[in-house]
Length: 250
Ligand SMILES: [Zn+2]
Image (cartoon, rainbow, N blue to C red; front, top):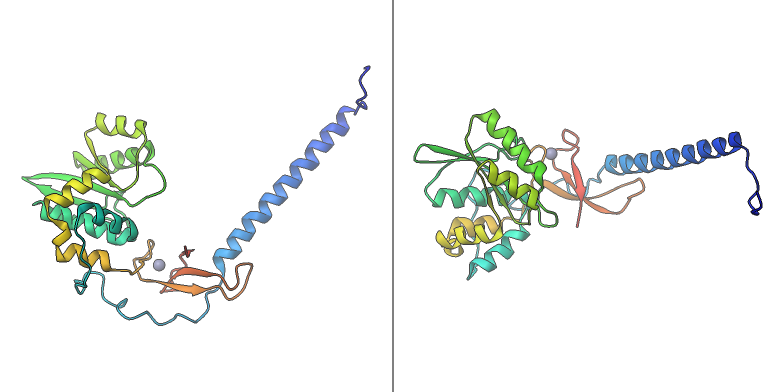
């Protein structure tokens, strides 16, 4: 050895690796704990009453509000702003207007990944709604729908989405006859049913309720009372402590 490196004996090096490894494990563990504690924060009592209009049962028709939109493109903008629950309702209305008999299967308790079963001329199509705006629908989502189709004994499927999809997802979908309805496909359907003038569509788009994806109760904007996120606003299920679902307020 002519280099300037000091020769470190093998056992010392091993010990160093073990120590560094342990430090990494401890740091990761502390991080996970911090996240868990943040999600367990007890909400304050500040919002224990539902805001006006939020107590409407989910099945009840919503009051129509002045929410005129002129074009399908404007409609899409509004659709991108609604929550998962309203998106699923909207897709159900669209298929209904196109002449399908629509049965809801999904929501907070998805029936094997199927949100809606739509039927026309004796042929059923299992529909899954993907209200993702920021990431692509991948091959995993198609595989899940394929599994759900087999389970339910339904031959045809459709994925209705607002975002994009991967090439692999498209190839698998094509191979198994799963229709991908992306934003432009949805726009065409909206135009066909003249959705921009449809009171039911407009009522859904005016519905600002945020629904718990775990139990379908309304969610409330709350403030964390203690813990590392104290003072921060978050969405919490209105049935707390029965359902402890929370999500970040944007
Ligand atoms: Zn809930």
